Image (cartoon, rainbow, N blue to C red; front, side, top):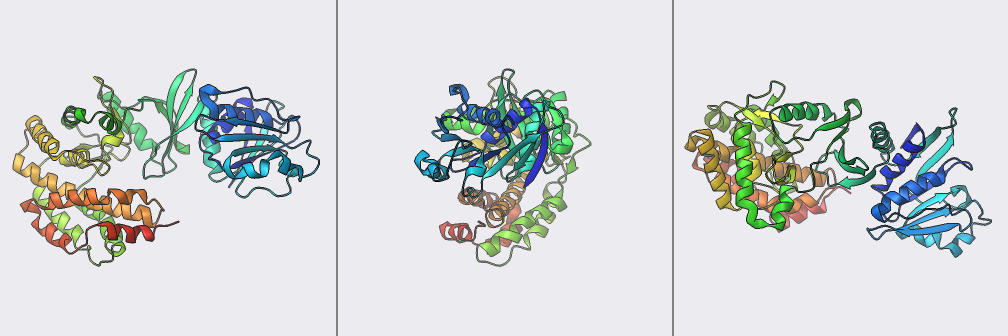
Length: 466
């Protein structure tokens, strides 16, 4: 993929830092352009960004031909200037040929090479009508998004920030932490068009006193947001460090939901009703049974629609943040829970987010904590306990069946096999929910399908997209 952008020194360095955030050992950047184009300026910004607080001086390697550096992750970085290279055979003496396999290599004057490295990224820097600007041509996978992120960060006043990738999720969204003189912020790159719903929901949540991040800059058309950095203390990490906090943490989560559900539902969120829930669980029937070597599953959706009409329509819908679990909540001590990843918010039965938090696909929650939190929510909401527990079981079954379908699709279609490891836990939730007497028709519909045991998981993994 090729993209072009005019860039001053700040944007040139911002582009280098954006690339530095994601390059891995064995990747190469070819820096092409005439003398004085800014190739060393680009390389210097890249290397110093990789080194962070341990950044060194980065002189031009014009006379040494090669300079080597290490970053804190243990990656070796080679910066080569081949302008004075008289013959490609000299590369063997430099060791550059061997370095290409294991190091990150930045190569100025790549036309001196006898063969360009496979898969190399090209940054070609040419003159521009404005003497303070260069015309940069970037040839790289996802070049347009890389350039857009760099231009957005520079335009928002964060062009000098170091860029570090943050763990993403199963979607196309990507997150980066920017750190600089002004502190830190999080860049959200979402090419799917969800920035507008995220921004709107953020405004609503902050307006009602909840812990959504402040939006610092935005370009919704480009799918880019810069938001307040709420920190690294995801609830999941806090509980890994100190499992004894779990009862108190989940009490806070339950109390948050009770408070959220007292607010009027905003008029801009879509309903998640019985027909929609039935349609969504079609993902399970479409992907899991066949992948597991079985047939069936098509009868599950209509059963869920009927059960929802019977068990879950007597309670007014509330706001649901939907993908609500320990990986999307940030612990801030006594401050309100930090909220992320809520652009898909909907209006639905109040049990939906509670079951999402307490039946977490990624981590075990003590069943005693789950029972206590359901009881706590019922005390806060005043809802009928028997009706709520039946609806909770239904929504838990629907949600977890859908997740099994999503995990199967992520492997078979998208090549993301790591989610298969969560399947036994998710299947356990399905069985727990189906044990509720009100869900007997759904239990019958699921009974003929195989569990995701080790053999089934390996069968799916063997067909994973590459």
